[in-house]
Each structure stands twice: as structure tokens, then as C-alpha cells.
Image (tube, rainbow, N blue to C red; front, side):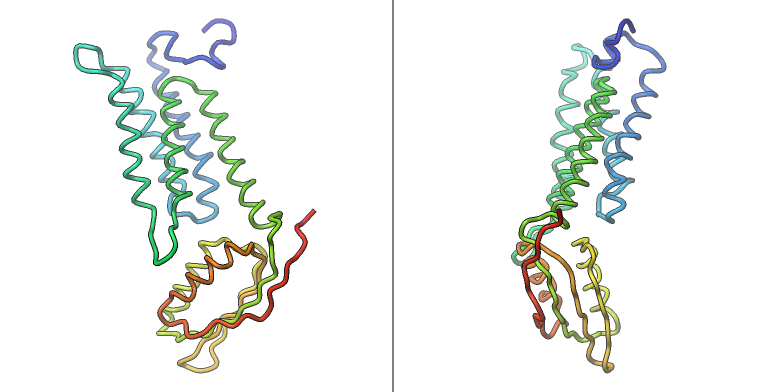
Length: 238
């Protein structure tokens, strides 16, 4: 490689070499870790392992597409099918509730991880690394905006009464709270008797997410009532 073309050009353009493919595979794993680490930390369905494999698989498929010649078929078809295949994988993580759709962000992250893998398979190593860092920082920045700097943040204080059902109801409620990644939330559980449990939830949340959260909580079969203690608008953090 001459000059600095290896920084922005495709490494494959400099001719075949035994060391290029292993390095591209290693870079695909590194980019998958950059994107998947942020999702793993927030306990999302598509975490570290999933996104590493998506990125690596897309890179390998793209690299293999260059191995085909015009006598064996169109080499572009292999890479093109990645887009179709990843669409099915993304659709599998989208869940439709009674009035809510969840998992769209996870599906989009899988889609982006596949795109990064294709960039790596094309030999653009530093472009893929830069894109992975941008995606990582973008997800962190959006999360901070929604939980700390959103102009519509409110102080929320709710009390839920539910039937314990042998502990199953609490597990369902805890799973919902984890999915919403509540920042600075105070969660108090109490069971005054064997057939009645209470959850007091105090947090800061934007109104649009509040309605989504409450909708999921009241959809839990054993939730008997939801009482609002306080709902006041707060100033966004400076």
C-alpha cells in the first residue's frame, strides 16, 4: 500500500493477500463489539453476541462474493441477499402488543451492524471503525437526551396494586421496568398480605414514554389498580 490510500481506500484493491481476510474478520468482530457493547450494557435482546455475529457474518458473505467470477454467477447477488436476510432477522425481534410496537430500535441496530459488516467485507476498514464509533456514541447520546435532557420530563409517582400470583406478577413488572431503562428511578415493593402486593414507582420520564409504560403495566393480567400520586413538570438538566 502506497501513500495513505490504506486509510480511506479499500484494502482489497491492493491485490489478494493471505493476511487481508483474517484481518477483515478480526475488524468485523471489533466493530460488532463496539456496537453490541452498548446494547449489552443496557440488557437489550440483540446484545454483544448477536451483533458481533451479524457484523462478522455480513463481512464474510461480502468477502465471499468477491470470490465468484462471471462464469459462476453475478458476484453482487451474494451481498445483495444480506439486505434481504437481515430484514427477516430484524422482523423477528419486533413485537406487536395490543397498542404498542417494540423492538424497532433493536431491529435497526441489527440492520446497521450488517451494513458495517458489508463495509468491512468491501475492504474499507477505517470507514467501518469510524461508523461503529458513530453508532455507539449516537445511541449513548440519544439515551441521555431521552432520560436527562428531554424538554418534556416529568416527576412521576405511581402506586400499583397487584396479585402476587406466586411471584410471577413481580417478575413480569420488573421485566417491563428493565426494558424502559428508567434513570434515577425509585422502586419500592411491598406485600401487605399473601394476596396483595404494591409497587410504588417514582421516576423522571417524558410524557410520551409515560403513557407507553403505563399501558404495558396495566396490561399485566394481575395488576388490579394504578394510582397517580404526583405528576409535575420539571426543568431539564442544564
